[in-house]
Image (cartoon, rainbow, N blue to C red):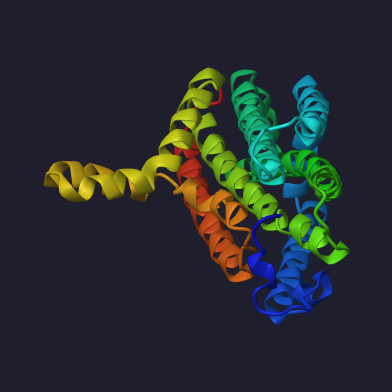
Length: 314
């Protein structure tokens, strides 16, 4: 490494245990465990869990889940040994490519599952059978979303763990190739640097899955996936659109700010800048993005309730 990590700028004795022992990271870990316990507790002690578990099992049994998992593992191994000819920055390029691939895989599974599960059950009249039981329409929508999140989590977790192992190996491999010394703590910190990016990927997928669920209540699979693709592209470009519209006419500024309001700003989930600068994303930023994701998902669910409330299922 030609540049020193920002992680080491404050102290020469900084280690992984030193980073994780900070109050911010401790609070982040505790909050994550509480949220996971609450999320899985709902699924096993409420009626929502019946729909969520059934949706997750259905998604995992689909061929697309196996294909995304196997191809994801293969691609992560490929970029680990693939030379990028980046003049000593192969590890950074590997991190960027790996995070982007995990994001695309999770988004594909989330949008695909939302499109096929909800739309097919509505068109196949099976949703009407479920709603004839003591389950209302809102529970049906929320249960479907929770099941989709479950299936995405089951894809995200093995890919993330495997990617972290490959990043750790890549630091050893690159240090041997370049002949530069790199101690164990630096290797761990370079690997831990990817963890916030993986968490943001999960947040981003939940937001897009919520939007896809809302769209699925009215539109078929193909239209849903096209709309989600457009939202994903615009979500990456909204900060740029707002910035470029400042010097234009008022109508263009209005359209840019309007799009930035109704479309999630997905550029906030991108950690490529932090990786290129060898810095670690602060846990406070993760908390704010998590809150933003929760609010946007709640808004998407509200629209899903409205769209599905008067949907004719007969």
